[in-house]
Amino acid sequence: MIRPILIHPDPRLKKPADPVVTVDDDLRTLAADMLETMYDAPGIGLAAPQIGVMQRVLVMDCVKEEGAEPRPMVLINPEVTWTSDEVSVYEEGCLSIPEQYADVERPAEVKVAWTDLDGAARSEHFTGLWATCVQHEIDHLDGKLFIDYLKPLKRQMITRKMQKLKRERARA
Image (cartoon, rainbow, N blue to C red):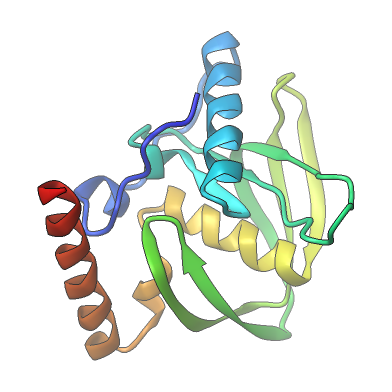
């Protein structure tokens, strides 16, 4: 089921999410809904708080090549366990901040540990777009948005645009 995506500013997007205690069928349904919502948007990542669910769950799939096999991932209680000293700058966007993009500097590589949908412990070394995406989504779980990395003036400008967008959508 495709779920509505919260648009900034929304207080839920600024709150840290709660750890998942049990991996059950409700959580598997949530993950399936999140993947469907992300692909429909379309996006490459989505965190549960973006659909108003305050749990530490994110989904992502950074495979963008035409005809390539998709690689949907579900990360429960993800945690960055290592970051490279090397950084990369990527023009980020966000499904909760539509049509706004800005360069964000983050570690170029990260190792992340998480629980999968079977309750098993997993870990992976991410590079490139995958590294940027997983860090962006984990930030959501901590109540942080990509615009929080920007200078105050640019952040305020984007926030005002989002407030205007929300008013327009409410009137429609």
